Length: 218
Length: 113
Image (cartoon, rainbow over all chains, first blue to last red; front, side, top):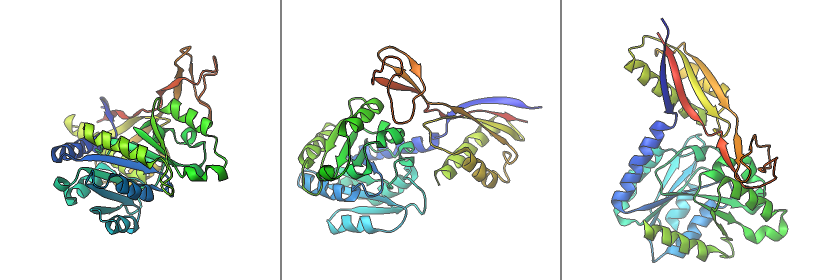
């Protein structure tokens, strides 16, 4: 005889539970963590290294680099003097809470104030997997185009800050900032945004000041 | 690749609840998936046939109930389905709208024997 069993359980439950454990571990060590998401080539690694320059002396920073393959990004971070862990997902399109849990076990958390997680370059899947970080940040670069909020709403909805990068390229590409910002506003009303150029340094001070305030208020 | 971990999660949830109900077989699994939850039914089905093998969910049929995205206008309360590339209320043309449906992502129920 067939019997129906009601469940109503979120499919992401197991990941979410482990993400909560990651958060507890970070809080116990007094470490603030941010999850940086963006499409491939948006300038995540360069932005993170420039952020290091801006907060150097105020915060002790470590990084977790997520990529399908290679240790190019972690090597850059190590060369900049950062404790870094490279996660190779071997084809997976996102980081998940299990990978972060393993990476946190390797980092010297007691000697750090801030951990920046660089997620796999992808505007879809990373939005679905909580990691346990305190805030999610999206980097949208000018050359990607002004229609991305409309095409990838999930990503724009799940972040607490938006960095608009490569603004030094605005004179050279078609990018309607009003159309872009309207899409962002609908998906994530009042979202704090930072137009920056990691190349020229424009806007990096505002971002660094906001980040320091976030770490300090935790 | 994202669908593999999702499928494993669906299997884990279904087996756990089936065991609690002393099931000998899972016959059906009912999933509720919103339009903004990015998974492909066919991929989940594909992975299912591999990972459910040898479990009591091996022969279970997966049922996907898709929930279309829905927006609600904050100015005139009109409820509408968004069209691609424009999040604007079709009734009063206000851009102040919120997403009211489309995030669903859950195992709703299972049928067991």
